[in-house]
Amino acid sequence: MRKSIAVIFAGGTGNRMNTVSRPKQFLELQGKPIIIYTLELFDNHPEIDGIVVACLESWIPFLEKQIKKFEITKVVEIVPGGETSQASIFNGLVATENRYDSDSIVLIHDGVRPLITEQTISDNIKTAKEFGNCITCVPATETFVVRQKDGSLDIPSRNDSLIARAPQTFVLTDILAAHCRSQSEGISDFIDSCTMMSYYGHEMHTIIGPMENIKITTPSDFFIFRAMVQVHENQQIFGF
Image (cartoon, rainbow, N blue to C red; front, top):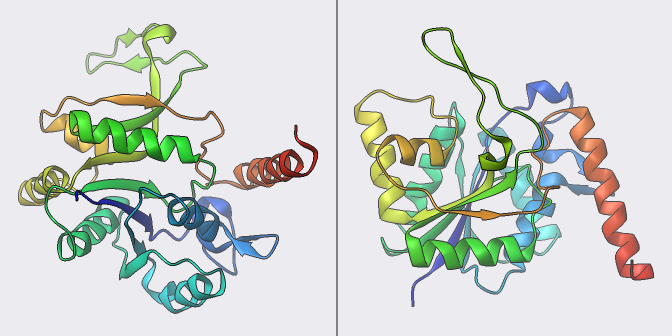
């Protein structure tokens, strides 16, 4: 049966968070690191068969302890992250290739995006199996202004604009081939996986995910995350 694997990258140091004691993915809310909140989403999903994590190398022992503490059962391997997100994702994909078939579905996700839903994961898997890829997006709520090479400005219609987030999901052999090609061409600065795949001619397919699917990068993001966790807890207790 075709497998669905989550590749979680958490190799960054979190400079914009201005933390001294630990990287942002290991900041705790109610005694639980952000990355554990993220891993639980995939660990609890019935269609996810395994999880590979690319982690800041010096923090791998700590992550292993937290995975054991919070009873995360689907993590099959933790690999060192790279100098960039692109490099960390590649390390995770190579580890995935060593364990699973080349036609496996891989959901690439930030370790600091803990506010996706079970439905988002399901929609990614379904769309990628049907079309070969899936990019989680949210509608644009503000106007984009794009500066062209000649200095002129292009303002796309907001109604036609989406913001790409994560998971970004692909067939393993396709995304690995794109990474290998980018390495051979010396391109190491793709901002995300869908940018890389689009650059190499793949047509991207999208789903709409939850607006709260933010990346926790700054202190303000952390406060939003804390508020959303409280909302979810209230929903469980009070039913609203």
